[in-house]
Length: 150
Image (cartoon, rainbow, N blue to C red; front, side):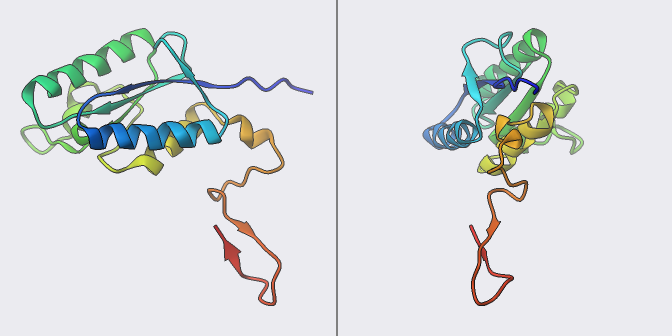
């Protein structure tokens, strides 16, 4: 039998209280999916950076943090307000500045953010009989066989 290792995710939350709330939602779901957090970028299987895209100093800090995570880890997903910001010419600012990021999502994209982790470092729940790839939707018995519960 193959031993399943628990994937570790590094996480940085930058920005306003709403960004912090989104970070907590993402981390809660990752924990529910069997992921652990890493205290360092280098010790993680993947890094998520939740960014700010409004205040110039915060944009710089977010871009610098993304660069640091890429340098130390190489596998980075970006979420938050900066993920939705366009550069001059209409291109995504994060992808223009850091083209090697694995994925970019915007604000309030908590589900998209944690779902992007799965192909990169699969959840240990995949190896469990209770995991369902349709995001925890399961069919239940009833008078109508097509009834679904979330």
